[in-house]
Length: 75
Image (cartoon, rainbow, N blue to C red; front, top):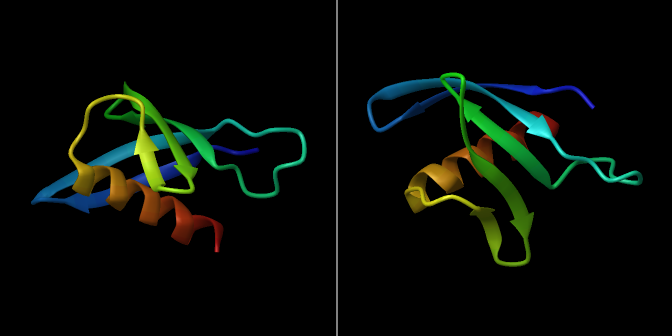
């Protein structure tokens, strides 16, 4: 699977980075991505039953914005 480029406006900042999908063998749409913003690892973002979760402390709004961005990318 290809990396997803991230270009996201968030709270007055333009975030540029990449989401590296961590796909399982049978995934059509990966539910887990390693997130890099500005070349730095932000954490692993996963979509689960409770919504989007980042394994590293971050603002909930940012986690949701990244999740919505990825969801839109795959639509």
